[in-house]
Length: 468
Image (cartoon, rainbow, N blue to C red; front, side, top):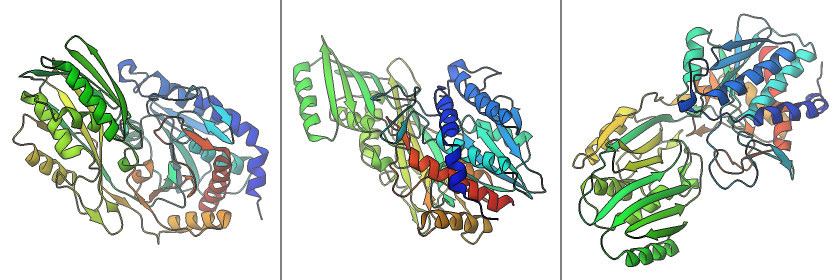
């Protein structure tokens, strides 16, 4: 029996777009300040989860809500279970959008909205793939679950809880990366360098604020500085600095107080070299001035060990593996307030085989030992993950990709972390193609309509080959 998967997807294009637009309209950013027992990571992710499960119920699937933090849509019977892991939460919006990020629009063949490519669009594509298999009444020998998370962009509380109370699938993929396949993922760990807010001398660092999440390159940074000396000279020097650096910014002076703002370029924290870190550029400028106390330690740590170094060379943690490539380091969050003693620099590392998170922690501790720093290992780190290209799962997914694109499939390893790593035989699979423009975690995020449709075609064929 030959199935024209493209014909089946095209027949459902309008419904697919409508359901996706509904999901994209839900602001599903994690909000800890609004979290409750009934909404563990905030009302937005819960609302998106409930809406997706509602779609599954509408289409006649078995669905399960796992305590408003995860859920699944189930189809088929069998001794083995294929897990398709997506997520409905999104990263914070950030500044500079041309449209409302939660009022999706289609223009020039693209769907613009936060979550369009990461990961509501790809998850909806995978869901529609399973919906097609169900509606065609195709015989299957295995069970499939589209598993929905609500905290992928933060701590993975959703999957921690889901896998505690539900059966773990035998194999599967996450539609949350790129084709042809991601069969390897670097380890992921986050280190906090904490400083007290002490100042001494003629300059006072009142506040320093940059970044929203560990896994995003900060696009904007702001500092408030009190100066007892020549503030006009300070203003002129900052303006000159902006002419020499790949950033923009401005300075506002009121009396002896200067407020400085720098704008860089956001990027996914797994690929920090693609961004321009506004936080490190602002700290680098301030580090040339005579701050003292822990404020000086804070600024010089950023300038000496973090600024323009996305490979951890200055900390001595740089390392490369033949298969997994190089370690990357993203300085994602900077928070300093002179009235507090828990000011932080947040460093997110994606590391290959050959390193451990303990080794990274120890080397950073050594480098900052002569400062007022306290180094903290953030919980929830994950080691490197790899599935052999000889695994039948990998072989099948690559064959489907080749059949529908005419391109040669090959293995890939990324620094990003996907739910694919939750399973021993788990990978990431699409939905970006080799020629797609990556806007994940950036302003004006979009997914190409062609990519959405093509991914749905591939997912339908792939899921059926895996479960028939």
